[in-house]
Every structure is written in structure tokens, then in C-alpha cells.
Amino acid sequence: MDKWFAVVGVFGYIGLLIGYILAVTYLSPEKRRMFHGVFASMSVFILGGMILQSVGAITDVHFVESVLSAMGITAVLMLGLYVYLRQKKRPPEKSFQPSTPRPSLSIRSERAPSLPAENPDEEEGQPFLDSSSLENIFRKGFSVLLYGPTGSGKTYGVIFEHLGKLVKRGERDGIVLIPCSDGMEDYDLLSKPMPIGPRDKVRILQELEKEFPDLDQSALSRILGDWTRVEGPLREVFRRAQKGERLGVVFDELNRASRSARNLILKAMDPVLGHYELHDFTSGEVLRVPLEKIQFCATCNLGASYSQTHDLDESLLDRFQSVLFVDYNTGLEERILEEEGLPPATVSQLMSVAGALRDAYRMGHLNAPLSTRHLKNWGRAVSGGGDPRETARMLWVDRLIAHDRHGYPDEEQVAGILEILAATFAETDGVRGDVRKTSQEETSRTSQGG
Image (cartoon, rainbow, N blue to C red; front, side):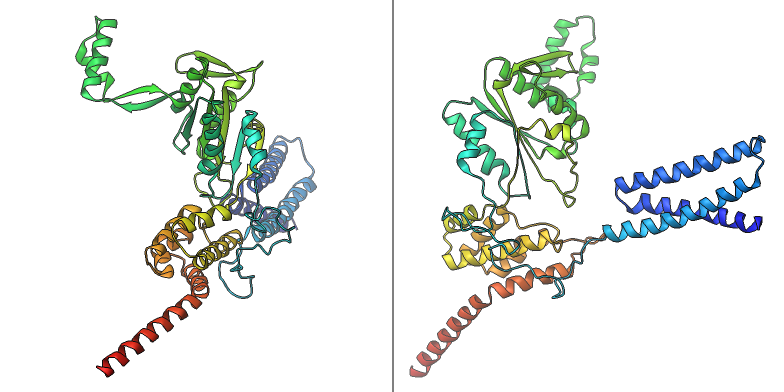
């Protein structure tokens, strides 16, 4: 019987280890920590029991049998839990088969009924930001965070538009845009690298030579190199605000910034006794400005599909007094397409395709949505005489689909997009075919008459 317990214990611990490795490899960090806790606690329990038994503190053989049984039971439970969590994590099927709801080719959302729009320019089912309320938020100087899908006009269509109105009215003195990237660290916000030309290098060397006359100029030249560091964008904002300017600062794609940069921004946005403080650790200086001198704004793309992005923690989100979701503004997109010279029927068709593809993206069938920028470029190409399906294939189809590890496109997603395009522009193709047929008949009659 003891041999059976030993066999169960050995294989149980191996199963425990395999379950932990699978969890670490395939599950999310939250589930990973749970498996790590179970594995670590069981390992400590077993190791402690072995040590106590080896020193003679435990002489009851039933303890060993109990430990081995617990190991086997825990291994089975962990394996079952892993299979259950793995099934929940499995992404939806990517095919456009009829078994799954096909994205609607209508620009009107079918996800939920909505009340009739009081504003005729507002599309049914389209999330609408009240312009007057939003303008009031910006005028009050509230810090604003906008999030939403890429290319939905968060930065220039909303933030810059409202801050620009404040600048025109003299309520703000300027806008500072700080693009965030995955490689941006905290010191880049305080002092950023800048290449220097030969003249600037000679000037800097002369100034250093006056300040340090005992140092050799050639040594200074080697130390200086071809780069220098100048004032960073966030320090510039605080310096200008100290001089009395009222500024709006915009962190574009904030969740792309590194953890250190986000921590520095978090501290800078913390109101301390009626003012903001920026601790410049590169110089040891502390810059303090009144709260009304700086209005913080930011945009971000949240979601698992955006690479090189980080989730914003609650402490940073709490610094923003207004957090708003910005979806694609279909009314604005229609006006953009009309300004490109497209007829209403073609505008409706392009918007229909955009709505269907965005619904497909939300259901997990596509890797990215059709942004306003891509839609505008598509409309410009079609207005120039291009075929809608061919120009779409050349401009944005490959942007929306997934690719395998070798770089090859997902053929099912490509076929699904082409199917939507074909269904939308089938009537147009029929009209074009009738026109071509009529033209050929007229040409034939003319030649016969001649």
C-alpha cells in the first residue's frame, strides 16, 4: 500500500508541476498568479513535512500517506481548473460562416434599440458626445481622458478642437502635444536627447572651456559627442506655466508610455495644496505651478488587440476628472466623404462597409477596425475614378486582417472582407455593366450603319 501512495505522490507532483508550467505559458497573469500560489503553498507544505520527518519531529507514517494523497488530488484539481480556464480564454472563431451572426451591412446598429435622434445629424445607434457639455468641461479646466478605437478622432477631432477654441478666445495661451511611445522613459519628459551640429558643438565646447579651464578641450569633445540633452516637454510645460502661461498639455496614447513615465505623470498631476509639482530628478529642482495654469488631457487605446500598450492603473485614471469613450463619428465621416465629391449613394455604400467591418472587429472576426483616416483615403481614391473594391484591396484590406508567424495574411478574413465589398457594390457593378453593354450596342449600330 505504501508503494501505491509513493507512486501517486511522485506522479501527483509531476502533474502539479506540469499544470503550473501550462498555466504560466498559456493563461493570463491573474490566473497565473493563482496557480503560482497553489503550487508554491503545496511545495512548501511538502518540503516542510519532509524536513520535520527527517529530524524526527514527525513519526506517524500516515502523515506521509496524507501528503502523497493531497498531492495527487491537487494535481488532478489543477489540471481540471486549467482546462476550464483555457476553455474560457479561447477566442471566438474567426470565420465568416453563417453559424455565427454576420456583421450587418447597415450603418445602423442592431445591437440594441435606441430612441429616435432629436438631432437630425446624429445617426441612430451612434454614441453622441454633447458638444455644449463637452465644451463646458474644457472651459472649466477639467482634466480629460478620451479612450476609444484607433483613428476615431480623439486627439485632433475632440481635444484639439475644444482646446483650440479656448486658445482663440484667449482662455488658453497654447497647446503642448506630448506623443507617448513604448521607449519613452521618465527622464525623456524632463530632458530629451537632441543631435548637435558642428557650430553648436563648438559653441558648447567654448562655454565649457570657460567654465572648466583646466580640462583639455579634446577630452571635452569626446565626452560631449554628437548629442546633447535639452529641456523635455513636461518640464517645458511647467516652466512656461511658472511664467504665467495657461497651457493645455495632451498626452497622446498615454498607455504606450513606460511605467516610469506614467509614474512621473501621475505625480505631476497630483494636486498638492492648490498647485501641481514636478520633481526634476535630473537637476534636483522642484517646479510648482497653480492648478489653473495647466489643463491635462490624454488619449489612449484600451484593449487586448493593441500591441505595446499598458493598462492604466486606477490611481492614474483617478487624476482625470472626466473619462469619456469616443467612438467613430459617422456624421463627421459622411461629411468628409461628401467633401471629397462623392455622390450620396456612394457615400452610403462606403459607410455601410465601414459599419459592417467595425462590427466584425468588435465580434473578433478582424484584427483591426476601419479607421476614419483609412475611410477618408478610400473615398479620395474612389472620387478620383477608382473602383471601390480594387482601391480597398490596395489601401486598407491588409491593415485589418491578422497574419501568421511567417507574415502571411489570414485568407478567411480576406475572403470575408471581399465578400462584404462584393455584396455592397454588386448593384453598382450591375449598373456599370448595363452602361458598358449599352455603349457597346450603340458602337455596334454605329459601325453597321457606317
